[in-house]
Length: 458
Ligand SMILES: *Cc1c(COP(=O)(O)O)cnc(C)c1O
Image 1 (cartoon, rainbow, N blue to C red):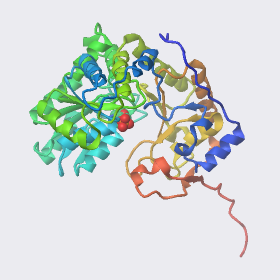
Image 2: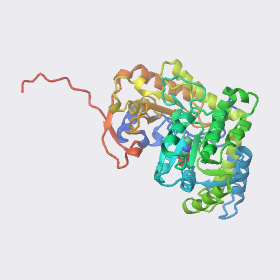
Image 3: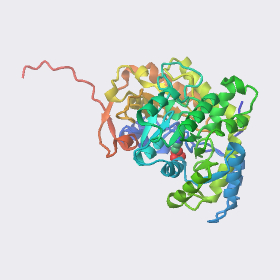
Image 4: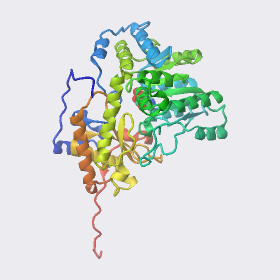
């Protein structure tokens, strides 16, 4: 049962079928190019799209916009200390800003960084340092049909040891654990795995970083699934799990429950000094780091709300009920359902569309046409050279949609799925300069239906 109600409402509208067809064509069959006003239920991302609480809105008014020594920064620092257990905080404009600050301070050319699975911006920042990002997921983490275990987000120490054998320990400055594992369908990481990774990082003398974007959702899964924590609160689990790290990198747009913001936190003084100075270069003076004072206030309140038992239970259960409903309707989804999104196996949903005709993107477009629902493709269109399953992600914004909205989405997906044979593949109609980022801007077009072979004698 939700433990909140609506105080401010936002008008949304389902455009007519004709309007949706026009909008999609104008957008070059890429929903990133569709105006938000033309979307009815927007499940593009859970990043920065949630609703703030009345307490957060109230806190905005307290924002201290002083360039140096802002009291809003102090309130952010004390929230990070209380909720996450780290004394030193370097604010940044959002998660990737924090990644630039942290990885720019830790990683050099030729290095190797290990991660259960690098999130896209993490991978890009490691590569931008001239280093090599290497994923160490557990078996089956990316397999939507594995119907796997309780902690499919875990880090594989065996895989990491193979890399160490290959490159040596000196080449590895950082070992990263992303909780929940965003690129592995939002699957959680256990506390016992976190302890093993901490031991492993200490053994090879690497800095142990936790990408804590969804730390509260992860703690909720631990409270359900890891026996040792049967009696612990989400807040206690979060502190325990994060406490094994040397540094955190955080996007406030996820479990910070704000629309923008992020930070690095650490208890290592040398690392703090390095990050602080890099932040001045790229983000801002260390008591605001690219955030307005008011945004730091909202983030300070959001971090505390994120670990409230009632909030996080409602959040994760809402996503789970939505995913299970799709599964019950026969839609092939990644199970168990992760913390922030439901992932549909588009290759299984649209078996007639070959990989080079982007089945995931075709499914995304069809859901928009059918019900004004916007999801995102995370398959061969988004990751041209990677061997990834053809997934479509329906991400759930926090505290934003209710049961009637999810009924509509489920109906939409079900009817697309039932009529799947009529869905056509797509092909590229433009060729953006950076292939890794093409899914944000590329235009596509439907593959023409094959004309029956002519019997002409010419
Ligand atoms: C969103 C995200 C980031 C980057 O954060 P932004 O605020 O989008 O820049 C980094 N890591 C993970 C796991 C994320 O989900």
